[in-house]
Image 1 (cartoon, rainbow, N blue to C red):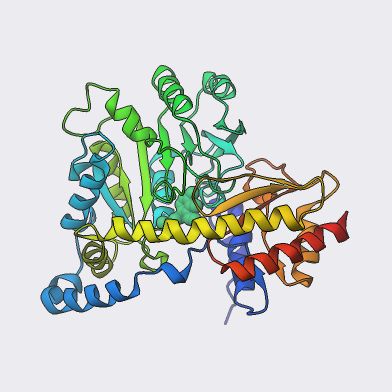
Image 2 (image 1 turned 90 degrees about the vertical axis):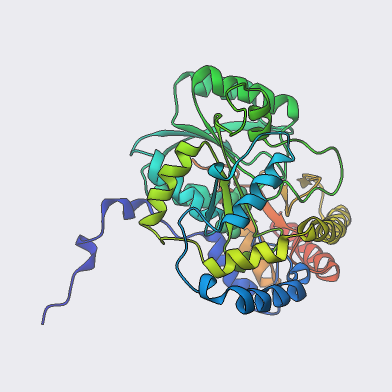
Length: 406
Ligand SMILES: Cc1ncc(COP(=O)(O)O)c(C=O)c1O
């Protein structure tokens, strides 16, 4: 019997696949004595458990034959309608033909890679950006062009310079960005829409956190501003933006449920690509999410999440002020799950992580989020997962680890 030599059999695309530092870190959170600010985990304290239990029973009682069966690739119609209505609140016409349900936004990112990216295509990304998007698109041979950001998010001047050389699309997380927590101003959003129109470069707007605003003025999604500015969007959105959002941060990530809003033509292509991946997203989970979210429950629930996360953000900001040595700075996000800290230049946060883990605290070294390297002295801190007492202890341990490394 011959033993198969797998190394020679892997497709070329696997050469650019790599494991995620964050998923490795998540393993650390399983050790009970480590305080982890690493993963992008929502708090289990705000999972709507009772409502999920009731909805689950109801769905099985009234629709078992349907929800335990295969479903359509586009998704469960009542849920798509609910999401279309939800999006219409932003003042843009969305129909269910604009909506596709996916198994997490992560799947939507992969589907978009599958239908849009040829090897060598230039993809414009924020610097830093969401690591999971880079992971999804590496396999399709994407070439990333990082565009610098400042306090208000991506810099439109630098973006225009990058767009002049062409690109397949621009990828943005404009609201409470992962990893920095920054939000792109409305003025810049409008400018970016003009640039996208002028250079014919579409935008993928990834918005898992937009609903989780604790303070400050709401800024409309880029998709909504784009739709409102067009006369070819009456009745059904048909603009330049592909919008992604998810139930992971407003209901529960274990459901693996998200949605895409895009021109119907893009939805149709994604449906074809999705058929080759999983045929359809769990019918049961879709019906469950619909029952959980309906009749205004999701809006009430979002209020609760905002309250809990605001308190945790405040606790983390106070603890940083108390325990960080001089020379460390951090962002003050008005919502979301993360803040971004920058250490003095002599600190490399990958080495710092080892010191920190020895002191039983973890974070994500910032360099993982830079498509082409950089940010060696930065880190992402999640404030949603740990209870306030743990946040204080964890930040004090982190402060000690930084002092030790200076
Ligand atoms: C910017 C961004 N996009 C996509 C995802 C993936 O979300 P989902 O749980 O819906 O797959 C995340 C998760 O943290 C994220 O931060």
